[in-house]
Every structure is written in C-alpha cells, then in structure tokens.
Length: 320
Image (cartoon, rainbow, N blue to C red; front, side):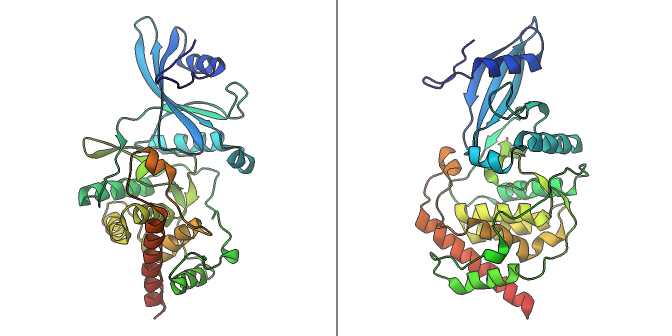
C-alpha cells in the first residue's frame, strides 16, 4: 500500500504501514499520512487509520528517530519516550497515549514510537504574547510538576560540562556571563526530584479554543528539578520575544496552582541558558517551520545577552 498526503511526499515504507495496521488490529488500514512540522531530530507523521467493518477512524502519530548522532549517544530513545508517556498519561496530564513501540527498529527500520494524536495546534503569537497565553503555558507546567507521576529511570543531566564553561566569544556582556559561570560552578541548590518534561517550550504545547489541549514530545522527560522546565521555557521565550515576556511567564508559573517555589531560583535559568554555549546562537529551525518570522542571529544574540545580564543581576542581589 502506498499512502500520500502531499504531492512529492514519499509514502511510509510498507513494513512501517504493516506494523501500524497490526497495532490497530484486524481489518485495519492506514488511509492518510501527514508530516508534522516543528521537529528537527525525528520524523513525526500524523496518521488516519480505518478500523473494522464500520471503518472506525483512529488518529495516531508515529515518531521515527532519524538523528544518528543522537541515537549513538542515547540508543534507547524509543524506550525513553515510552516510559515517559506511560508515566504522564495516568496522572491526567494532556499527553499522548502510548500505543506501541519498535525500540530497535527491527520492524520499522528505525526506532519508532506510536501514540495517540492530541487535539489542537501549536500557537506562536507573532508579537509579544498575551497574559492569558502565558498563564496557560505556565499553568500546564505547574500541573505537570504537581502530578503524582510514577518515577522513570532517566535522570536530568546537563548537556554542557559546567567545569569547562567559558565566556562566549560572541557576547557583548562578558561580565554577565562570567558571573553566571561562577554561580554554576558553585554549589547545586537543593531540589525535590519529580517528573519533568525537560524540553518544555511553546512549540511543544498544543492549543484548542484558546486553552492548552496537550503537551507533546516527551522523549527527554526525566526525574529532575522543576526549574529546568521553567528555565528552558524562559530561554525559548527570551529568544522569541525578549526577557520581559520570560519574566511574566515565571511570575505566572509561581502564581499557578501546583507550582514549585524552588523554580524561582535563578540558578536553574542559568543552567538552561548555558545550553546555548559555545554558540554563536542562531534561529531554531523548528520555529521557522511553524511559520514564526522576524528573528535573526543578531537579534537572538542581543536578547540572550540581555537575559544573561538580568540573571547576573539577580545572582549579585542574592550574594549581598
């Protein structure tokens, strides 16, 4: 069977289609595939499946991990996302339901996860977002952190080695970055480990009727500090809209039911910020794929410098 959605978009391989149909049961067939935009390390495709004599419609999503470098570092990506989805869904979080996985790609050619498709779409306001949008984003993060999810086996770690950090060559505010590095090379603040998304940002949140309808892309979820989710989201908001928007988001989070007070510690924001190093920073392709316009490398760099200065000032106030 060959399945097309857009002219020129290749069909999913026959072995993948057969595997999907097996998961749906007898008398099932895939009738449509639609590539989804926004991801850069895997192929994510929406599926419409007809099942049974009455052609019941099933809406699923299949993710195939295509980044060979990532797979070399973390060959268990499909198992990781499986565990995260199975932990998140029972808590009532609007996360996809896990359907099946081909962890080593024996059936599908690549490590693969099959899951339900959530309603809604990604919304990236073209200008500074409204307070309700930021409150919705903050509220779902707080709901995640308040959930009683079963622990999973993966734990948070930094992608950059803190002991090797250096002031970036591209910055115009080296003193701010020096202060951030000094803070990060000091003691780690105390925190209560909990399930975190680890890649929580606006392009992984779905909206329907101006309300959050889902959180997707759980492959990086782990046990860790709540401040990593808020810090990573703030880092994305800074690049998209600037530091003021990121600050409004943090206040909205701390005002939300279920929020974790330790997220207010600027240490976690700094820890997320240094993931852009060594740089120089550029525009995330996923935003462009989702239709967000108006960014360039110079603007991103300027906003990150302003954010670094803001965090350094917070750190200095804590020192005094």
